[in-house]
Length: 203
Image (cartoon, rainbow, N blue to C red; front, side, top):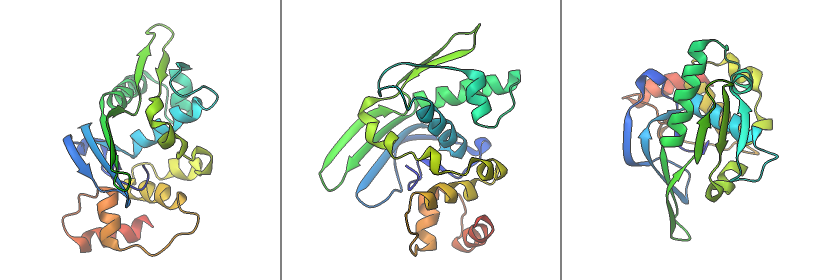
């Protein structure tokens, strides 16, 4: 997922609604998405929820205090942040992902990154479960490989955050065209030269 535009480098205010759009991704995998566009904040949240469920079989219900999720994300814990967390979890649960293995010629249609979620409004505990059919993709999320302090310091620098995850998924980085990074990151830069300048700063 980190090597695709599923979690793009756009800011929250620039989200658009996507309808069954084919997103740029690594060779051999095609990803289509329907829903409100996802970004790096959404990726952080999903990685955190997957990490918190590490000792629970995929598909089983997990109960976590909202406070624990916000704290793990490095967010404040006021009323605004609780409301934002609800909106973020709703967006992950509502978005529909279709994944096609181009080599095996098999497509898995209509999966949700979070299968279902519910919140107890008094205790503010979240109860959620992950889609068992996406087990292989959850397994690719290397929460422990990410330097979370550095990532939090990059808050608001979305291309830098996307690059951090992209590079972390490679045991040994190899040359990549600027055009490829522009596509995979979901950048909205109109001109390649503009993206190249943004890329230098992000790196």
